[in-house]
Length: 116
Image (cartoon, rainbow, N blue to C red; front, side, top):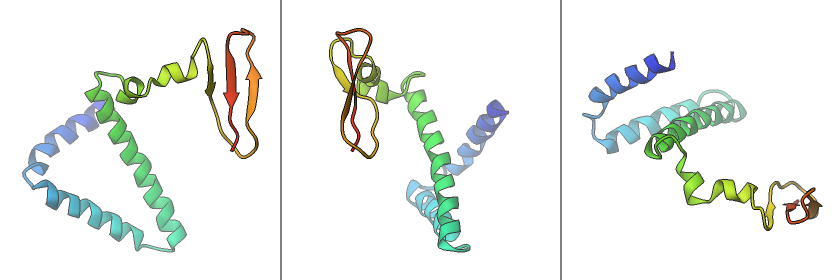
């Protein structure tokens, strides 16, 4: 199903790309504004956040295509090293409270959980 949807998107994009980007952007923004005006603000915000989640999926899919199957954030931010630093401490989570340090079974590794 996903393959069919992506194939259809590729086919439709041939026609869609004829429209200049500035106009396409205004069309998309116009639909978002229209969606925001339907119903109570709480309902429209819920729908707009759902659209935002869907847009993030598309952005991440394109980022992974750019990165050859790996999201560029992994390379740019040393994403894996942040969670697996054999010689130091790293922040692995946050919530409302004080900073807390937890000793791992390996004394050379310290895991830090910063609570803000």
